[in-house]
Image (tube, rainbow, N blue to C red; front, side, top):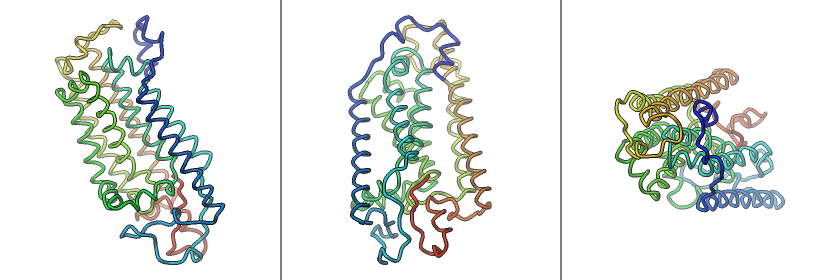
Length: 325
């Protein structure tokens, strides 16, 4: 998308001449990669020792089920699949490219439109890739920390996720708060962290990998995604049709391309509106066809991560998480 914007206008001579890297982002991404590698090794070691604690879903109270492990269907190898690893690595790569290099420099110093591209990547691409790349058993031990399971159940519902994401998106695009983030780098870092956390929560009712924190039913997912389009549309219209520059930071920024600050602002609103809208439409299409493929069942069971394991002979009443998106 940044390339498409670049083709519309000549690129400033120094924008792509260097690739800036920010140590704080590298440290954070490296920490995520190290944690993932460590959990994958723990899962492989547990398989070798035939331990199953992390593979057992939690009960409503947040404790492991009491029935013996031997009574359950054997759990698949507790290690990420090649597809999951690819998704996780892709998520980290997109995260790195979003927060470093030309896109970061254009966003932070020159163009509102580039900043909207960055926000779309941080909310619409990075979280679903990371969620798709993390099997549920990797996350399950964190639910055993006192209080975590109760909080996770509350914020992972469709209603809570919708409110959290919508308030976060609208709040950070209100001009005073947005301008504060642009003029104070620590606040800008907090903004991006808020986007990543809120977007991860937003994607969970659709892609969640833990049966203890269930996905919405397919009809519920369709309604949920449709409603998510409304706040994005409101923000986009507000920005696109504004008659004045809403964000003074960009009015004062050097003009590296032959567009005014107001034109840049309208381009940013259109980027949120059109590509952002197509992303939601694509998600709606995927959900619909998955729903049809599973017999158009309206219940929540067909939409869950462990649905395939519940269809195995003799598996009725004893679902075992397959940990696959």
